[in-house]
Amino acid sequence: MKFNPRRIKVLVELTSKCNLRCGMCPLPVLRRPYEDMDFSLVEKAEREIHGLGMKLKWLHEMGEPLLYSRIDDAIRLFPEASISTNGLVLTEEVGAKLLSSPLKRLRISVDSINPKVYPQLRTGGDFDKLVDMTKKFLEQAKGHPIRIEIQKMRSRMTVDETIDDFRKLFELKKYRNARVIERTCEAFDVNEETDLHGKFYGCVQGAFFNWIVIFADGRVTHCCYDAHGDQIIGDLKTESLTEIIEGSKLVQMQALFDKRDFSELPRCAECFKHGGESAAWTGVLSGVQALPEAAKDVVRKVLDVRYR
Ligand SMILES: C[S@@+](CC[C@H](N)C(=O)[O-])C[C@H]1O[C@@H](n2cnc3c(N)ncnc32)[C@H](O)[C@@H]1O
Ligand code: SF4
Image (cartoon, rainbow, N blue to C red; front, side, top):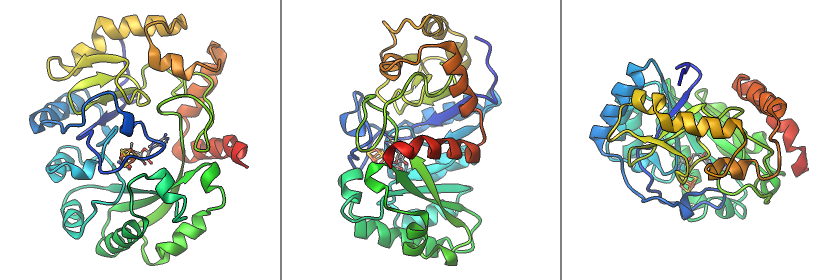
């Protein structure tokens, strides 16, 4: 299969283990083991990804990357990658490891600053501890070139919270390297409307093959929504990325997708459960995916009127 390395977004899941069991996340019901990636496989992933001229976007799919003991060594292999954390293992010691590594962007998924809503989203999390640890890390990283993003999750449950509320709580005026970003909750697991997310109407990625997601066990999927690994295209433990990308599995799956035959594509079937099969609509979604982040955010805000 012909592919453009600059169009593909790549994730390496250092670990599928997590200290939380968040309400909106597929991790609590993950249909694959909770495990760390062998460091030799992280090294192989680096050779393969960079060898094909691709850049790594994130050092996670599911799981908490800061639980990975060699997190700093992994960052050194992928200095272009970002990390998202639930913030609850961001001790001073872990903070020092990150700040002495080439990491450029750390996202802290706070999601809600309402102490009553927070535990419903981030099940198992301790709100006061998170606020304390985040404030301490902001201070530790003051003046450092790392970019810190405090994530706010938009949903019906957080509709009353504003970016300004987050900025005030974390006193972001004091920290020029920190800002609040907003994100929408999405149907990662099942495509039904909940207080956290709406329904999907077709392939949200706008194309079958936009991602390469390498799970902690080395298996590779073509979509970042495929948290459980229902649509595996290969295994990095036994194959090269080129073999996986050019292999017959991906070609066969793409052909089924193009015919909108979801009989062997359970994850795609979930996305298309509520319609959206037309090629024209997929084209619209594909156009949205190709927008720069800021423009995509405007589209998300428009779609989010459903929460109001
Ligand atoms: C799966 S987590 C892995 C990294 C880390 N454990 C964390 O929580 O940041 C990565 C990001 O996905 C977000 N997330 C989890 N479930 C989601 C959903 N259903 N829709 C959108 N984002 C989701 C989390 O808020 C987090 O920012
Ligand atoms: S969102 Fe992150 S912290 Fe929460 S369960 Fe999923 S992987 Fe763990």
